[in-house]
Image 1 (cartoon, rainbow over the protein chains, first blue to last red):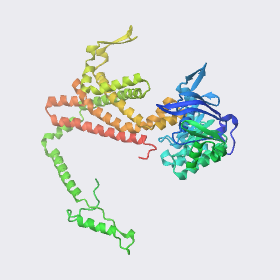
Image 2 (image 1 turned 30 degrees about the horizontal axis):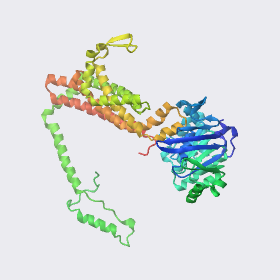
Image 3 (image 1 turned 180 degrees about the vertical axis):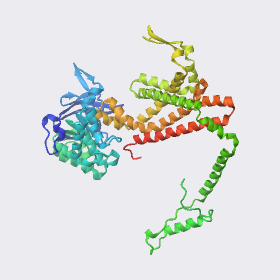
Image 4 (image 1 turned 60 degrees about the vertical axis):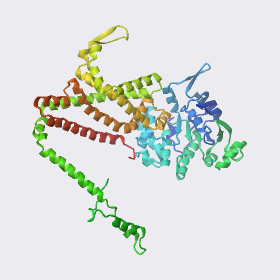
Length: 269
Length: 309
């Protein structure tokens, strides 16, 4: 298991380390707002799925249901064949206790739009916190692994810095290293470059591309069409809480079948 | 308000010509002179110097009065400042403050998390507690505790509404000192709860979300991620509360507990030297409040790790 983190970027992670995702008729409302209106999505292990769509289309909410940051109203999400947040018994779904949900989340890395680094902890402490407290790793091992991760995202010299002393791009790279420290089989990115100055977007996308090449399953919500074209195995286009179409980037981005997709792409391209 | 470092000009009330000259120079630099060679003349503030003079005169008058007015009786002050009785009274005041703060904040933290919890019953109970204890004047509450034995002659431990295993005489268990600490702490808890709750609410929700997404256990999230950040906004308010409780202990004098203010009253009741003895109490309150402020500075610095300001 631990090989997933310590391998250099060039090495390919074995199939067993990565997780597949199955989403079945997921609905979610916030009050009267029906945000997800029956989502079905399969992500094969080791694949990169990029989710595109206008603001308010439900793509971030969908991503947040995958690690149960958002509870679904109906439908199921499973990662690597295990239901997320629930236990199926008979034909009833029993909500899991928080402790068990937290345990499930250690298998799913999540990278936020606004980084959400812990500002009172150094970069190294940020990365080490979860492996030490959630996975009960010895601090020494966790720190050694963290330094390797920092090296991998090109920030080996920033281990002792505090988040506020870093640029946005550097902070997001630390956030990615923090998510990787749990050696997750699945990585979720929620608009990882939307809060960055334009000239800093590249350095973060490069790290994500690197990870994609290493064979971890990834779902990326983004507005970076170029990134989608280059890295995605599958592009999913969402609008008004539904998946409008999905397929290889060449198909969805270059010859979309739906009018709505065409209209969206013509605006962002 | 900063004073300029320049001495006041010879004609302090006519700053207009000077300012006008400065503006002209800045607005129309001659082509021949390099901009780097231009001297900047700061705006003069003659009225500030007038205000300084007036305030200084008042201060000197006051200081002069302190020294020359025999009514202050500094010899009496000096004689009583460190006598056994007063030192013991200071110690009682410190004990009341310490126990009141420790117990008050312990209960306050519990109440704060009850108010923040998802359970509506716990939320309402905490709300009602805070409402009640903020509504009852401290002195009224203290007198209630003092008279607890009148309401409940015996306290016992056992099955609720059932048989009891252990009983205590209320008078013996809740002595004067514990009644005072209890009163101060329960009063303090209501305020502490709101301060702690405010601090927790001030931490960005993204922080606990990030911690949750990393699978960090719930208690650890609170202890390691949320509370240290909440401390930044809790501390200044908490220090206020501790200092006001420290001085507020003087209210306990109504219960004839030998804290600083009570003891000072006893002494001047005997010797009639009211003013110098009030000054003894004042000096101790000022001294210890200063010490608390120094501690506050260092504690705040500790929790400012990683912040820009």
